[in-house]
Amino acid sequence: MSRSRFSTLGLPTWVPDWQALSKRINNINKSGTDAFAIGERPLISRYGDNSTMQGHWRSQIVHDRGHSPLAILLQASGDHPADAIISRQLPITLTSRGICVDTIREVSTDKFLPKRWEDMMLEAFGNAISQSGNYSILSILDRCLDLVLRSTKDDLENISPINWTFWWMWIQLWAAFCINSLVRPLYQKLCNLRYRREYREYIGGGDVVDAYAQTVFANPMASLTNEYFEGFWTGRELLGADAIYRKVLHLAFMTSARCRRFFITRNGYIGLAPSAAREGDFVCVLLGCSVPVVLRREMDHYIFVGDCYMHGIMNGEAIAMVLSGDLNFEYFVIY
Image (cartoon, rainbow, N blue to C red; front, side):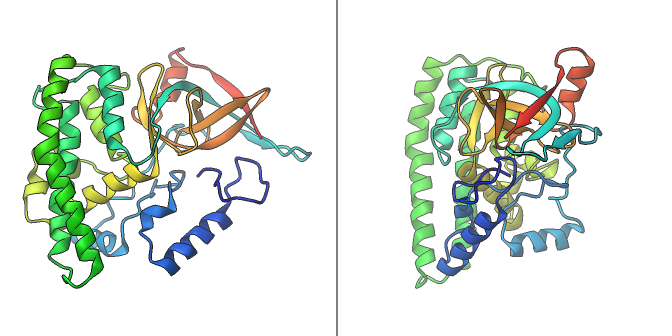
């Protein structure tokens, strides 16, 4: 949920303009544009179902597994109920109790640039390796490119050569193959010379490599748990015959890459922010809200930029830090 740049109603920033989103969806349906063009989907919901997966893939997965992998309960504010007041006088404000977790130190300049995300990670953490030593920061984009190759190849088998979509997907396949086979090996050699390979712990728990890999897919927003995410590392789902699992991973990656901007905070958290986020914005957890939000300070109040994914803060960790004395509750006046 974020203030749409298409909104012309003059609403407070914390009020979602569903009319603007509806207009964009109608335009997309009429023009046949890809669903990703809608922009970032709201993460704030009871089950965090923000996927843009096509209904065919979603229904087939639910049918095959007996339950939806997308139904996952998010509790960034734990079990705390909302503590907020809406003013009845102009200007209409929302005063909410919450926690300021961290400040955005750096945010990617464009949404669909995973390569830029990788550069940011290398600058901040070096070519960090996993605890097992088998994977590094550079391994993640390689896996994603391999995923795009195999998933696109699956789709080509079901499309007629006379369809223009076939040729567009063939171009994507060729481009991904060239990058993965020719450009990436040379770039990796240069990075190995420039950046140290060492194990780095992540501030939110685990290691930096695993945190980055999960953030690329906005996990658990896409519910890539257990077999899904394990398959990403081992290649079992990528190399196997199950095209549905490959499609889930492919669409989760493309959704997060196209629809949000990667950020790193001052304390070392990483995540995906709304397209309007910028350096100096605050990542906060408001009581009663299932996911963190990005707020921007303006004089004596804040404006609501949008909801976000920040790895290591999605399941009540901020509340635990308040109880331990590391953070404090405060009130945010949002215009």
